[in-house]
Every structure is written in C-alpha cells, then in structure tokens.
Amino acid sequence: MLTTLAETNLRVKKVGAIEMNTLKDVAVGQAVHVVKVHGDGPIRRRIMDMGLTKDTELYVQKVAPFGDPVEVIVRGYSLSLRKADAERIEVR
Image 1 (cartoon, helix red, strand yellow):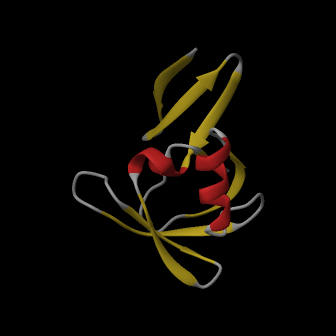
Image 2 (cartoon, rainbow, N blue to C red):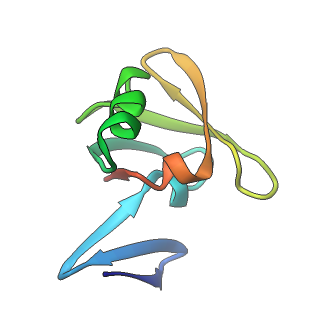
C-alpha cells in the first residue's frame, strides 16, 4: 500500500518502511540520479529504452503549469515525460 507524506516540499511515497522520492516531485533546476524504474514489463521497458536506467543523471529543465509533462535532460538530450511516467522513476 502506498501513502503520501509532505516533507520539505517533496512528496515522498512510503512503501512499507521504505521512503521513495520520484522524478515527478523534483524541483526545476535540480539534478538527480535514477535509483530504479518501477512498473510492469512494457511500461518499464519503454522508460528504460528512452535512456532512463539505474544511476543515470537527470536534470529537470521545465515543468508545465499543471505538472504534466516534465522536461528533463538525460544523456545529452531533452526528454518530455508524462506525470504518470515520472512517478514511476525513483530518484535520489
């Protein structure tokens, strides 16, 4: 079961006793690293095929007014992600 907590302006998901920061919650101008991509087979595979694999550095360049989509710089190119996909990417 997932529950959401507000901590230091980030939404942190709690899975059991483990807290998880997602790409959806990262502020504009912040750089993070991918910890894990969550999701079912085809969805997870599509995200990973775009270059979002473990330990990849991401820079959040823009976020649309309603939070969807999120534009990140990854491996030297710009990538726009839907909010639902960004929520599947665990970052640190």
